[in-house]
Image (cartoon, rainbow, N blue to C red):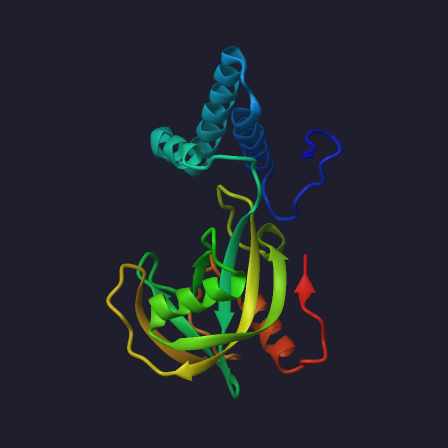
Amino acid sequence: MTRYGCCRMRSAGAPRWLEWAREMLAMAQTGLTYAADPYDRDRYERLREIAAEIVAAHGDLESSPVHDLFARDTGHATPKVDVRGAIFREDTVFLVRERSDGNWTLPGGWADPGETPSAAVVREIREESGLETRATRLLACWDRDAQGHPPAAFYAYKLFFACEVIREGTLPENRETSEAAYFPVDALPPLSLARVTPTEVRALFALHHHPEQAAAFD
């Protein structure tokens, strides 16, 4: 059972206002999943609205789009899962360039229901780069907040897989990425820090070259 309040552990890296908003959202979402009393449902709806207002106020955003984003999540509240593929070639790493901010990242994104984590990362790499790959090893499962990323509305776990290319391809037309290239691990381009950090890339590179080591976590 999900526990809230003083017994809940803090997530390293997230500002307190975001932790409060996330906790309120989780309480509202889970309450709306199980509550039958209409008055209780009204209270949980209002709690979700307040969480959206907090995020909007601190992020200098309109509250309505944030509320719509929160309202799309239904069911028992759980962390989101982001999957990323790490493709290393000697001392270089494969990156794609995000259209949204013009910076670079390991290919990846949210996992979809009904697909395994490895299938999700293979799909994301194909969609964002055109490469056909195979996931060979889980390198890390990290709490997003603990890894130095900018604050985000949703709490998330990040799964990083070592992947190998089984067929080359060309960058497909898509709305997410505009380029793809290999870069030296010690000379990375500006990274899309909401998606991956230099520290993570270097840690993944080290894990890739030490297959005897277990996956990093937390």
